[in-house]
Length: 389
Image (cartoon, rainbow, N blue to C red; front, top):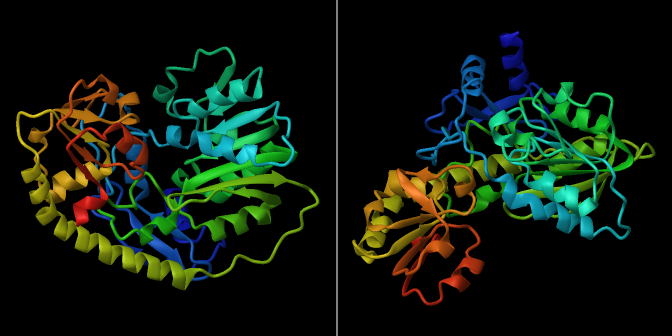
């Protein structure tokens, strides 16, 4: 059985081709992760040691984290979904006709951010959620309107169909996304909606990458054209495309009248070139960050009220590859991580509004505009992009 699963990972999950090529090996993988590309369609996916993968996924998580990682051995923390909740509702509002939603399934509901908002937004009497990691459901599992299955998705809510199935930053975690999408197709009523959000492989073109895009928790890596074509071939019609440089957000409608479209096109050369540029940029950036971080260390004075905002993978890269002196920072702020852990890098996480006085800020978030408005009185503010100046 283990050998069969491993061989399945060597074939492309989108077009079934066995013509694949190893294209990248991330550092510090706990599951011997390698990144492969399909020569037929260009889909990018991970191969790994099945025994090590199962061992990692059987570990109990206490929802407390001492550090993250900018490499493949990313921690067990999962907080990204809460940042994506409004993407769906913004897409739904774009529909010309506001379809009535009475039944909803949330696949991998994590900490319930979408489920709880959907209950109120649609006026639902209940919502069904699938989340295997029980510790993540502590805050909403006793809500009488929330039905949570901790089983595998294919054993969950077997006899039910839904007006809407929601899958946010979930598909990339599964070994077999084709099987998951087939399950979802069965769960959506004819005329019902399916919303999927996954990380966008195109972000590899960002020349400022210092943390690895490929890591143990993600097994498949999608481009918008490939995933759209594949889902359309299942019998869905694309209604709204909210894709950004970071995320692919797609709202589909299921219809029995939809005819299968043409075969998936070949993006092999494009994605191969994309990953080649990424590897080169990542290597150069990690080499140069030490020099750049020395200047940052010099700009912040000890014993001042200095703050780091954004304590994720970029911060880990600055510590690991740039020798960032975190002793010069009094406060660590991260609005998303604070919902999952009290401390990070042995420092207590606090809310920005709880800090009375700020002398300097190292701002490590991808979209800093809103936060910068709050910091217009702070004399020293260094943003992520300025690390590379």
